[in-house]
Structures are given as structure tokens and as C-alpha cells.
Amino acid sequence: GDVRVVRYKDAGSALTDPTIIIKGFPASVNHAGCCIKFGPDKKLYITTGEKFQKDLAQNMMSLGGKTLRLNDDGTIPADNPFVGKDKVRPEIWTFGHRNSQGMDWQPGSGLMFQSEHGPSGEAGTDGDEVNIVEKGKNYGWPIIHHRQTKEGLESPLVEWTPSIAPASGAFYNADKFPQWRGNLLVGALGGLHANPTPGVIRIVLDGRKYVSQEFLATTYGRIRAVEVGPDGFIYFSTSNKDGRGQPASTDDRIMRIVPSAQEK
Image (cartoon, rainbow, N blue to C red; front, side, top):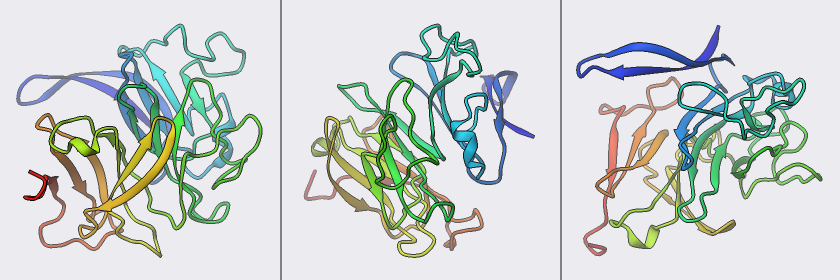
């Protein structure tokens, strides 16, 4: 009936001692958000979807369509933006999201970036996003979308039309690809029509400004998660057996991107 975050202890061969950190997110087959990461401030950040009920994103008593911020034990940080406000859930960090699935912090600036799915026929199509996500701000859904603007609402830094269905996000800050330091890597599940296999998108940024993008690993179908390993290489997982892809005999896989011989 709901989506929740649960903490377990690693007992070596099993996960034990489940502890519910937070529950009550709107549950759905699709559009449930579900990215969780600890930020540079050691707080736990969680993205939630609005399960195609777009009004939830602006409803401050709902946990749907939000970014939440908690302490690691599930308690609420005193400096959350809506603590003490009437008829507002104190867990909320930002609101007005449709379905954010990627989240990471820019090296140096500490800014949070999120990748988010745009309208899927509810207000046109396409319009996937990358946003700079900051405390207490309203990211517009469903009031604005695509490149629309309105006072008091945040428009995306990057917008994709046709859609790519961004499913993850990780900054590169290692030494194997020194020319990529500070770039944001986004794994994409693919648009339903125009671009079914966009791959991993490497986004070049200059602080808060978008510079350019490059499409990598475009022959493996739907790409779900992207992470930078402790070895400095880039890892991504395919998601072709989820009912929407065209799986190869070896799917699903975890794959690795390494420098070419010319770059080594």
C-alpha cells in the first residue's frame, strides 16, 4: 500500500534487524521516485513520485512529488525549510516534482542536481529535466513544465525533447577520466518513440551553467543506474527485462566504462 525506506544491518550473509526510517510514500507501478542518498551534510535525501496524480506534487500534506530530508534514524532535522509550518509535512525539502530518479551533489559547490521525468502525455510529452535542487523551492509540476517559466517556480537547467527517461545521476570526480571531472552522468531508459536507446549522457557544466552533452554507451538498451566506482571507472546497469526493453541473451548486466587505449 505504500513505499518506504527501511534500514537493515549487514550480518555478512544476510540483512537483519529491519528498521523503518519513513513510510507512507504514494505507491505505484511507475512514478514512485525512490532515489535515496546521503548528502555532504550527512543527511538522508529521498525522492518521491506522484504516481500520475499530479496534484500531489503541490500538496504539502502529501509526501508525493517531493524531495525529503531526514536524519539517518528517521527524525527530522531542525533546519528543514518547513519545520513548524502549519499543514506542511516537515520532512519536505523541495516540492513540485513529477518523478525524480537521479540525485547527486556537484563537487566543489555542493549543489544538489536531480534528473526528473517530464510529462508523459499529461501535459504534452517529452520535457525530461535536470534541475539544481535547493532548500524549500518549488519545481513547478504541474503548474509549469518543459521550458516554461513562472515567478516563484524553478525551471530546469537541462530539458530533453524528445524524451530520454532519465533514471539516475552521478557526478564524476575521479582520476581515470580527468577531462570529465565535474561532469554529470545520467543513465537513461529511453523515450517511447524518437530515441529508445539514448545511453549514458555526459553533461558538461560550468558551475550552475549548462555547457554541452555527449551520449555514451548507446547500444545497450535501457540504462537504469550509473555510479562511479572507487577505482575511478564508470559502472552502469541495464534494465531491459523490465517489460519495456528488448533484452539481449546476456541481459540484464552491470557494465563498466574505461578509457580507450588512446586516452590511457
